[in-house]
Image 1 (spheres, helix red, strand yellow):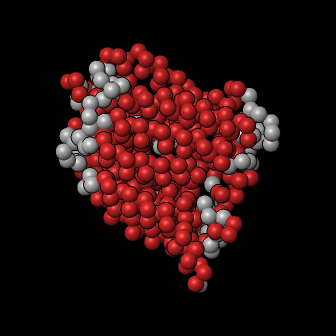
Image 2 (cartoon, one colour):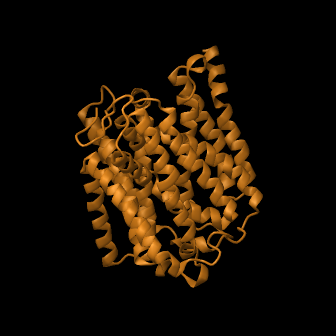
Image 3 (cartoon, rainbow, N blue to C red):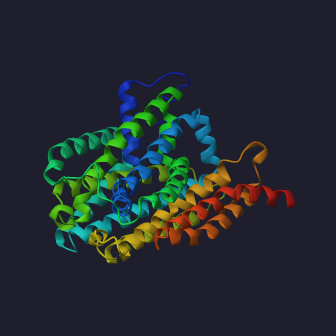
Length: 405
């Protein structure tokens, strides 16, 4: 049900321009920012400009398409009810991913110091604020964050902008290796949005026309602008032009911190509001909450102990921090999109019993994992092609299994 302060989900009634703009900013800022902020840096380092393009195009188009694919609020509600566990897991992994990323960032830039502890406490407070805020407050905060980020970048980026910002030098790997990477990006960014609780919040609160406008502007304009900024400030991450990660401008540090905190906060709020499965006892809920807190502590500990982020300047090797980052990324590149492809997309005569679909999904993830590990960790990127192929044929396997059982 719509909440106070949310745009009405009235069929056929378009949202006001202000509501569309605020929902667009909410969508752009709630997307997985530790992917959008840092993954392009690694891809440009490895593949040059081709790496950025195969990241940006599927990301923008895939996320924006959800506003068209889910025709009304009822389609969103039905998907949430049928796949409640998967959508919860998506938000849980996203929160853990941001906890790891912020701890890794703090270790790389500030070290374990008293100011860093103070920043961590402030980040926790801000996450709690965003988690408790109403949707209207979250949308206004998202729009304000986007405006401040763009304005700050316009003032400060020229001071540390690489000369080849829009035409990066050739990456460490041949540009042709970006082709198999594109297959993973299309699969991941095209399907992951359908498990994102914040996206479903926007879709349920907007009319069909308002949703198309908000998703289109949110990703075709606002999010695209932010990832282009990532391309511009990559030199500060990679140590180009004499700039090292430890001397990053304060405004960039604040931008990355606040955006990650915002993303974690809005996902935490939607996770708390997501209806619990029927038959879950209070003791089970308490145990799940304790496990969730323990997982966050573990993610923070991992980020605080792995190798600092300076290793991104050396493309010849992957530091332990980047390996952990890429391991988290496997959820968005394999596990979640494979679930959508195998368990959500098949409908009508292609539908199979949920238990069979989940078995096929699990088998596809297990079978494809070595291929993606070779592609992303061993840098043998052509292994990504058979990995994606395994996922694509999994629905056929599920269909064959259902006909036998």
